[in-house]
Image (tube, rainbow, N blue to C red; front, side):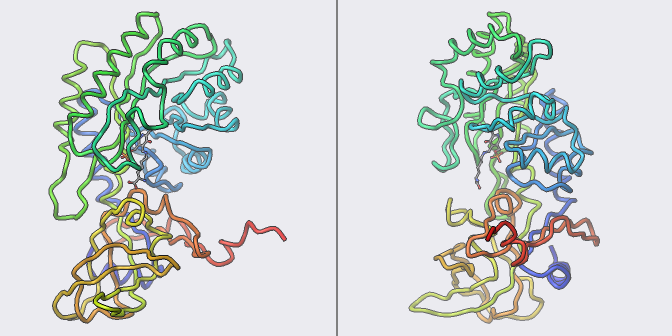
Length: 402
Ligand code: LLP
């Protein structure tokens, strides 16, 4: 983003502002479809990374599927006109309403996380109109990533453990209202090596054959998402998509399954930028703090995961040489967003862009301190349009009952 564009966006919509560059997004979508579809690997976008109705509308025009994990995500996708037959439901604690949405065919299939969900869904579905399901397995494969974003391995809550799998197969084979069409295993997020994906696929292939041995119609194996992205825009890409999809396709060759991936971060992270205005600069002790008009509420990732999102100055004036600074938000917390080199003369009113914030920032935003969540804007070339309103004080109090 050029300083000129950033200035125009900030002047038009205010700050903090969450910007998605559709050209960048389309480039990443194309990278995935190019690397995967021609090898017969389906790609589903994990909506939890970022979703709004206009985004779902944009995806509807691509070959991507969509993984939703709540009624909120489902309704958002429906408002964007995303077709039911390309959606599927995830989640490890689905509500009755969510399972009813599956039975009502508002999605193509459900990914069952646990035995309780299996029984509840079986109770809602009818043998006259069997519901397509997959089983989410905990294949025991651990990816070397932050503990909070690791979802495979024996110490995590997700999926059906392999030692319970045989019992679940027996049960599902006795339920004519459920049709087991596939298996799924997502082992974590921000993975930077191909190896764990291949090890996970090996487990899925073995599990698929155990299901087929019981004449269950397992046709697809979803190898999860988790494809890592670089932290700083100039870093090399940490995982080669082509190597990943070629590796997966080669490993599954001859087994007769359709494969799928479900990336969230790698599809959307790079297209997102957060724009902030500096509200104050102060030096306390030996530290220089640059306070911006957002923070923990619109990007909790630095605090939760120690994530870094490189800030770039978008003010078109000479601000002197870079000096160490700690970037902080304006919440009543030590919401440090990282230590960076920022210009000596940076001052209130200057504009900063934080890069690669497309994934898990807006979608994890909160109303802490009763701050409103930011406006979301789509940019394509010189054109921009607001796709989500920023929340006002009225918005953040609209649910109060007195
Ligand atoms: N599939 C399932 C079942 C998932 O749970 C997730 C993410 C994905 C796919 C997509 O994973 P991705 O390709 O985006 O890595 N809030 C954390 C990330 C949590 C990921 C949760 N599950 C962060 O900000 O890093």
